[in-house]
Image 1 (tube, rainbow, N blue to C red):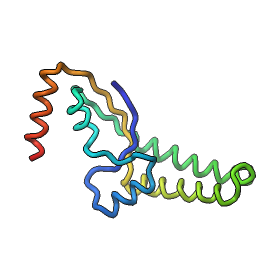
Image 2 (image 1 turned 180 degrees about the horizontal axis):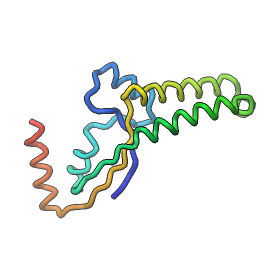
Image 3 (image 1 turned 90 degrees about the vertical axis):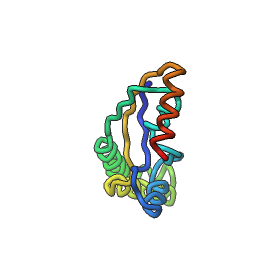
Image 4 (image 1 turned 90 degrees about the horizontal axis):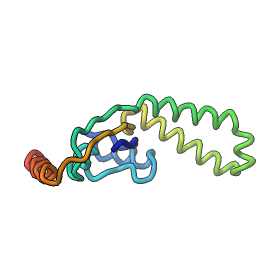
Length: 128
């Protein structure tokens, strides 16, 4: 399995988590780390490729190009909606640059049921 995901950076305090959740996409927070969730779901050989810098470049370009096309976007969406969108894009970029939001590519492979049970038990033991 392979997927991209944007998530709240690990190790943040409550205020920073709240900022990251407010600035990130819907459902940005997770109950556990993605490697832990994958392991609990029966996947192994879990690899993560950090794509946060590319996410930052994309967010900055989206903000910039939206500003360049402001007149047209205001006509399409209305001035208030456009301004709200720009503010959200600014907050997202600030959260990425502030280390609050990350984007990664995760890859993993399914493991046998027996190995999944062992991994789940091991994960529980390590977290205590």
